[in-house]
Image (cartoon, rainbow, N blue to C red; front, side, top):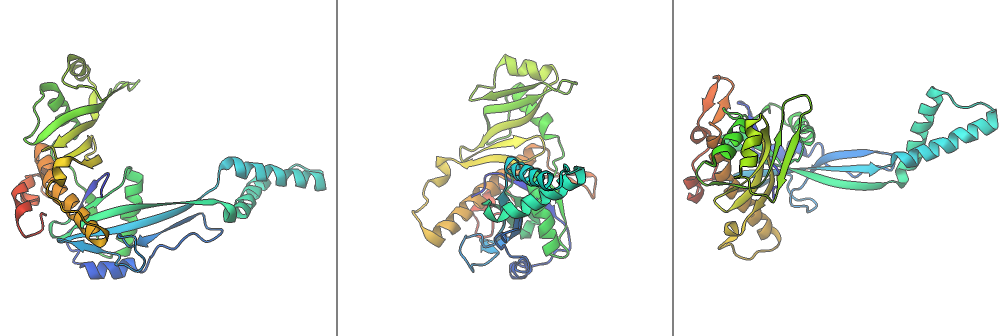
Length: 323
């Protein structure tokens, strides 16, 4: 259900419940692009079913979805039309269009071509754990996450968000793991990483499907290169890549996570997928934060142990939501 996660801490004072949030999001629903509209963005039902709730609630977790549609208009096609219009003006007036006229012609060409352009649709999911004031955006880039967060804050008055930061630098901790081969309990280094130097040339070394417990990797670390990405697994249940900015990417659930799960379909499958994802990641994330020294408390200027902001993995077996 989730491929990438960027974590945010929800500020104090946001007391909106799921029904209120759904009503707020309904003011900005997703509507497909109009013929001459280059981009459409709005909130859509997470289940992908028309008229379904805009906020899905499963085991105390909320899921919302921002949908995005863009009209694809290749620059080469636009330029070809601009050239045609410019040529017509020159033939009829005897004068070549100037710089300002060319700019106007480009806008005219785009307006003419947009109704015939193909559209591309994408969606970004947001997972909210309201009891613990945590929010996660399933985005592969910070720019896409920023777009979602900006629109969510605009939609829900009183909502404030701050990126979760750990007390210790993920890059420094990943370097230590690679250097001595010792990781926090439950975590295992897998076979992919990226190392980057800090000198003017900024050299980059990437390993893919390659053992990392070798002298060559340690030599790169000794020379000053630092990990920007490292593939890890957790309890043989979840595989992922950790970045230097504490983004969790390339999430995949391993066979062990699916053991004992009954076959489901339709709405039951959606609920089961969300329960599986939040349950597994609800154990992984606090353990990862703990392995990075705890969450940094900006108000206190100190680290907060992960156990203080998220329950231990044992809580996953309780009836209460795992967050």
